Image (cartoon, rainbow, N blue to C red; front, side):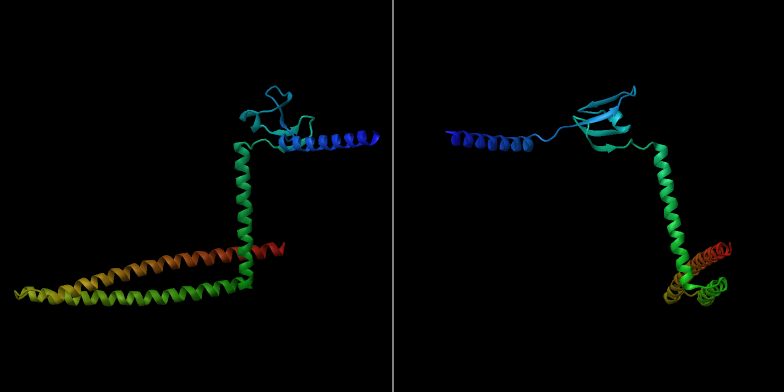
Length: 210
């Protein structure tokens, strides 16, 4: 008889434990919002308005155990400050990488100036060639126009080949003028980049002397 009662109690205990496990699985621990309302009073509620949420709140259990702390939303001024700080950090990283690159390529300001002069001289040579082409094209157009004028003075029609030559040469001149303009833009850009490199290199040297 005692063995039956003991067996019954064991079976009841197992059933109770199984039931508790099932209940926990079906009904997890409920959480609440803990925050200070508009009067500064701490409250715990199962919901929170968007306005109160922006002020920050805690997620807690019914007995007050902290699960998560949500900080207040940033103000517009704080957002701007973070953006400014992020830009500052980004700019510092850019300058740091720039200076590392300069130190890998040059040892003195004079080396940068020499590199700049070599590059600019190459551009100048290209410009001279383009300008020479432009003079030649303009001269050829004048020759073709003179031939056309001679024919017109004699009352003869201008040959199509002359007209075609003039059109083709004018197109070549336009392309050459465009190439010259592009080279001049590149020269200005390269000069500015080298000047910036020189200025930054001098800043590094000045910092090392301090």
